[in-house]
Length: 261
Length: 266
Ligand SMILES: Nc1ncnc2c1ncn2[C@@H]1O[C@H](COP(=O)(O)OP(=O)(O)OP(=O)(O)O)[C@@H](O)[C@H]1O
Ligand SMILES: [Mg+2]
View 1 (cartoon, rainbow over the protein chains, first blue to last red):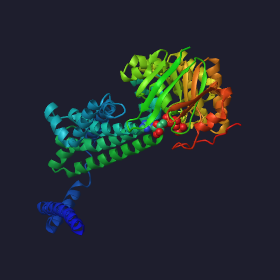
View 2 (view 1 turned 30 degrees about the horizontal axis):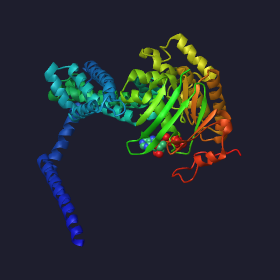
View 3 (view 1 turned 180 degrees about the vertical axis):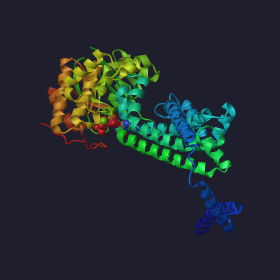
View 4 (view 1 turned 60 degrees about the horizontal axis):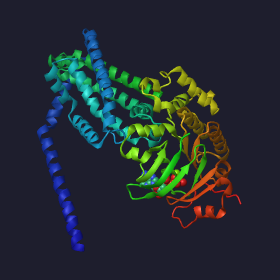
């Protein structure tokens, strides 16, 4: 008995020990390849100082161009999120236990959504840039697909958590499936759908900035150009503008959330 | 005027619980029947089987000469819908759509007849339908609350709205599952009065599960007692016999503690 326990304990700690060793190894290798030596950090600080000294004062001459580009970024995020949210509604219905027509459809939808979600948005952007070329369209599609994975899952979870009562009350009157979805499921899930969608917009604005770096339109394109041309004074202008827009959008969505919920 | 007849209905849940063990009775059109029985005796399950919210394992339930169980098993949507249009349900917990308005909730009573999604909502509904919903609300005395959100109402008011929703549905049979169990005694009586008045004035058949014997005797024409999924009592309300009643709530049953203290009249 004691021996058995010891052996089992030994097995478990052997496993844990093996896994721990591997992770420790990966960690040390990671630190090694990063080459984060004190000298590099110091010289990095020095160059950061150089960056700042060139960036300040920010150059506002192209601010109006940047303004339009940032507007494009915002619009990409907005249009992409709206498309993603609208597509997520039917997808979530197909993926939820209580609304899916059958188990096969539910599993297929659920696995597809999960697969879409595992691919990072930058990878989607690269694919769409190849497929339809540089520009905001690729960014919009990327954000739509990214939000389909995100909202599809959250909407579906919310639908599955709904109380059965209101749905049964409408079913009991002879309502069609459409009537039940529009009359009970969407209204009951509405506050949570709105909260998730607002969060999705905030998230998408940040990701739309980055998408420009791979050519998917918007302010990211300008930012990467300024950086590559060493125009750090313009880059700083862009960074400040991004900060303003992201902050403002978060404020607005907080206000909307407060009103709806 | 449509008949309701129940023949040898059994219900076994997937986990093996036998909730109904061959329940049979026929209810005459216009009859006010009260279902009695301790917790877990199968009242809720029986009512849900009649409307098709639950599929009975065997037996027949005829509503308007359609076998509900058969319709459910064969996924015969049209037949099931005909049954549901004729059987309105009132629930213990009201089951309103909480974040919608009162009038909208009443309007949903006619969802079984509405195909066009635009007409399901009060903005898009035909004027006659909105007026009818208003009239139903007025009948339950809540016309002035039409614009309120359902979750701002008291329990008694919510159950009235649920009754207005049934009025809007306009069924021949009303199935009420402990409609007053969540209400205080006074509001409970008011709701029972209202429900029975409506049932009588429209000459509807009603099957109502209750725990309060006194109220059951007062309102019911006929009392049916369930015990462990069997009918153990079926008598006109004025000929009730104390022996049968005590058998109904015998304590050799596993879960025989009633939710509400019983008031047995001597
Ligand atoms: N979904 C379910 N799955 C498994 N068993 C169930 C389910 N619903 C009900 N039951 C069981 O069926 C039996 C009858 O339950 P039912 O709710 O019909 O009783 P009831 O007479 O309405 O009781 P109460 O007075 O407490 O409302 C109980 O033993 C219950 O545990
Ligand atoms: Mg019950």
